[in-house]
Length: 375
Image (cartoon, rainbow, N blue to C red):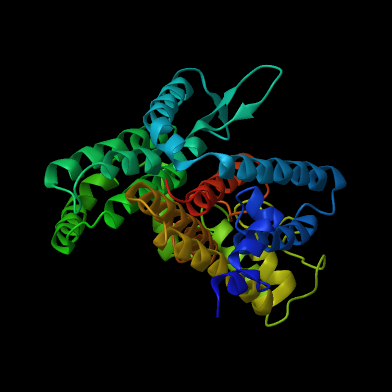
C-alpha cells in the first residue's frame, strides 16, 4: 500500500491538521474536557449565587477571558517560555513584595494589588505558573537526575515566593505555589532516599513550625479533628459543608433546591465550598460526574506531558497538571473535613476570575508544548 494512499485516507494526520483546532495550536480533546468542566461549573454556580444574573454574567465574562488566555498562551512557542521564565519569575517576586508594602487588605489578608480605575488582581496567582516555569528553566540545561547543589538552588527558587505568599497571609496559595515548584523537582528525578530524608526532616521540624502559624491557622488544624468543639465558630464551616454533602444522598435534592446554601447556612457557597452545593443538589452521582471529568482532564494532561519533546516541556507540563490535581484534591478534601480549611477554590467551578485565568493559561502552555513540534 503506497504512502500516498495512506495519506489520503480520512482521519490521517494531514486531515487532522486541517482541523481548525490544530491551526490555532489547541488540543481538541483537552479543550472539550475543559469546556465540559466549565459548563458543569456554570450550571452549579447559577444555583450557588442564588440565580443572580449579575453574578452569573460576571463569571461568564471572566471565563471568556480565561479561554482567551488559553488560546493566546497556546500560540507562543516553548522557546519563548524558556526565555521569559526568569523574567516572569523576577517580576512576580517584585509584585509580591509590593503586595506586602502597598497591597489591599481583604478579610484580614493583604493579597491584592489595586490599579485605580483599572483592575484589582492577586499576584500570587501568577506565581502558580512562574515558579514551576523558573524551576523547569533552571533544570532544562543541566544533567538529570539533579545534583544536590541543583536541588538546593531549585528549592530556594520555590521557597522565596512561597514564603512571601504565606506572609500575606495566604497559606492555601502558598502551599499550591510551593507544590507546583516541588513537582518539577520530583519530576526531574529526585532520588527516593532524598524524599524520605526530607519527610523525616519535616516531621522533626513540625513542632517548631506549629508556633510559626497564625492563631486562626492553628485553630483550623485543631478543628479538623474535633469540629464540634467550636460548632458556632471555627467548626461551623466543616459542620455545614459535611451536612450539605450528606443531605444530598445519592441523587441530590435537585438543582436550585439546596437548603444549606440558599438559606445561607453554608459559608462561601459560591467559592471555596461550592462542591458542597454539588453534593447537596446533585448528590453523590453529581459529585462523581464532576470527578470523572477532572480525572479525564488530568489523564489527558499527563499523556501530553509524557509525550513532550524536551526536558523543559516535560517538567513544566507535568508540574502544571500535577498542580491542577493538587488543587482539586485539596479543595474536596478540605470541604469534606479531611484537611484543614485553607481557602483553595474548586478549579474552573468556584466563582472568581484570577484563578480561572491562571488555570486556563497553564493549560494553554501545556497545549503549546504539545502542539509546537520539532523545537
